[in-house]
Length: 184
Image 1: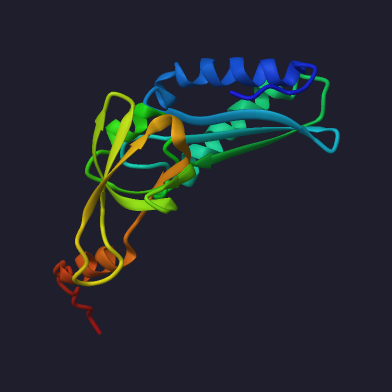
Image 2: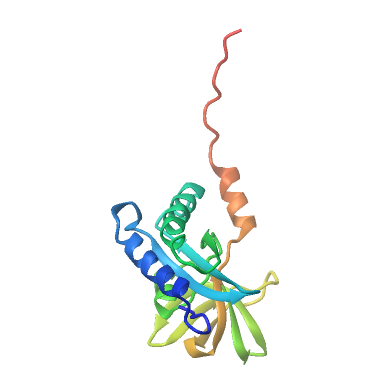
């Protein structure tokens, strides 16, 4: 959680409001992926990124945003509130995220080159101690796949990655629902 220089009242109210709301039954299954409040051009920008099993819909973002605004409107400082879904290519911010998404495709950028590159793509094969084991999928047909061991502290950023070709291929293989007959 980021703080605003001078630790504004809005920042504190925002953090407290989010914690209070996620304890409510309507929001109890939400995961707070990222939460920050930063001053930008004299306005405090409060950002909240959320996820839940099965994903987040617009209605959930809207409902949570309304509830947060009700609480924050009592604060005297000007603020902007942004509530968003983590999305299909959600960020991986902790070692726990990598462990949770084992078996999923990921893109990992490291602070320094590993094996000659700072960007690594593949399947999260395992998390061993503080090392992410990424099963590298080669870009070229016929190239050998490899395993990359990436220490968590060397990761600058990481996120899940959707393989659109595979997703489209799976979608095309699914049988279409039966056509509905229309009466004329």
